[in-house]
Image (tube, rainbow, N blue to C red; front, top):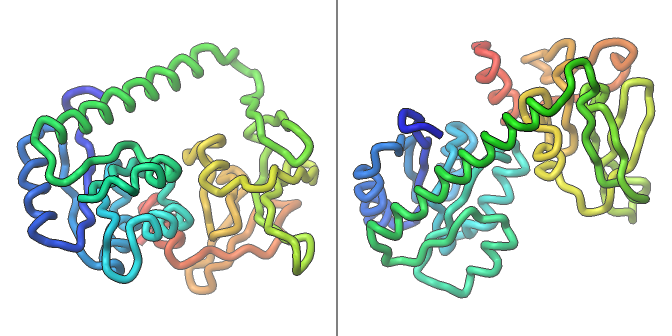
Amino acid sequence: MNIETKIRTAIIDDREDNLNVLKDFLSFLPNIDFVGGASRYPKSKKLLLDEKPDLVFLDIEMPGRNGFELLHEVREQGCTDLSVVFYTAYDQYMMQALRESAFDYLLKPFTMDELKAVVDRYVKEQEKKKTQKQLAVVNTPKGMPEMIALPTSTGIHFVDKNSIVMFQCEKDGPKEKPNWVVLENGQQRNKLRQGVTARDILSIVGTECFVLINQSTIVNLGFLATIEFKTRNCLLVPPYDWLELSVSRSQLSELRSRFDVF
């Protein structure tokens, strides 16, 4: 991440005075692009889903639902690349924050040096990811399939990423837990390991060619034929055009924005 790259940043805090203090602190960092702040749950959720910031400072103690619940909801609705810094006056949430794959944890009150250290770590982490991605591209022979490893119920399934049609979360029976299944070109199906989430899948396949169209379906854009705005029906290319898929309202808005369709 070079010096010109801006970090799109949001703040969620139920106390507007705390929100404004953090906003003022961030204004001293030249690589921060502040995209918005919110202090109430509905506006907070809308802000994160609409803006999809790179980095969010998220308060944990909020009226009604807490920051962890908010994070779960937006991740399930496609906000999977979000880096979260939980910031709170209480240190007892630190272990839970780690379990939620938080990027960092900031205790109130914090100093400018502590805040800058968090942002600097974020920049270094993004630079590291960019380098790893570039190396992966360089080391992949031209014309070779882009193989990925998917955790299945019996082991590991190696598959060409471009041959994946979609992922769906299904139940084998009313008493069974839902499980993600991968459908490959050629109608081959493989059940993924129990506990794998949509976020896990998107972290493996990437979001450039795969999109979460609803909470239980991830589609390869290479197999997508049409999306009807009025009905929100989604149609795949033959021979998969018999599948009945629908796009959630939030994801329809995201797709329209992504492809500049108004």
